[in-house]
Length: 439
Image (cartoon, rainbow, N blue to C red; front, side, top):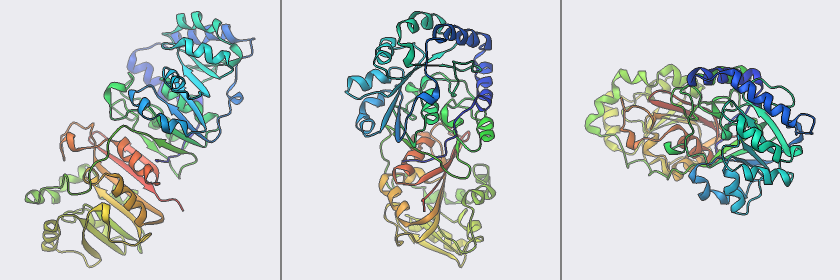
């Protein structure tokens, strides 16, 4: 499970992302406003729902319409509430899973939306410039008392804007606004490009706007470049829990794709700072003078040494004795202890470490056993920092794309180990993911 801070969207925070969407796609605001006003005429005076009328406490699973949803239904069944985006509602209902709220722009399965509204199930009907005809055709057939009318333009009561661009985005934002204690994302295939909705380059989906303070959320929403749900920065810590269920398989323990010792001189090339500077690593780790840390996949100590200058002790963990031998030839600081071990079998006591970090080696040990071992050796409050090559990078540096994972993999893996992700960012070639072990 991966945990990060969630901030309920208000229009002031959503508008910068909306402006990006309009700019990237060449859409006009007027068409969205026209659709909003058409929806208003159909529901106003007929008792539509307000956000406050929808109560979604406990663990809420937000179901996207990706093909992976059908393989994740057992997890969906364990949630307290189900919010389904578009055709995901039909998938759940066909599997005998009750839907507590459906979010739709009526481009798919409008009959499912109608039937749910007749049963008194809240249906968030979204108006945008491309679905005015669908609104006019279908909304009059719904039970209006079960409809929450929404827009991506400025809200105009009774039409509201909880945030989001696609049905899946809006489902996530709405669940958060309606009091979810924990959000579980099922049917969101971050590793499968076929399942990603069309999005502008600079809008990454709900996690672009789910982080930090509200002003942080606004600035983050326009900062990413590949159209994926990537940027999550929780500021001071989570206020709600989020689980991302992915379809990605587990990778092996350290030693499957290890760095070739014959190329070890490359590990000391200062051009590596282009991908992760010492200043950034320090700011992520926030080391204290008495800390005891472990560098996972330490190699020849390129990043180990500058961290060792700031803490009491660093364990340089690497599965290859050859790396330790080369590190010894360079000169190992007195407070650095070489440890030959796999991350899945660390020779430390429970709760022994204040933190662990890994620079460009996560893909070598990213299995569930390694994540559980990291969680075991961390003390309460201990932190984890991963900086690694991202699967979606161009391959200009580091490991080949076939050996890499993307950010969502690390977020999910750390969360599944019970660690709280509070910072996750994709850059052009790498990602950064930080987590903590709760007190």
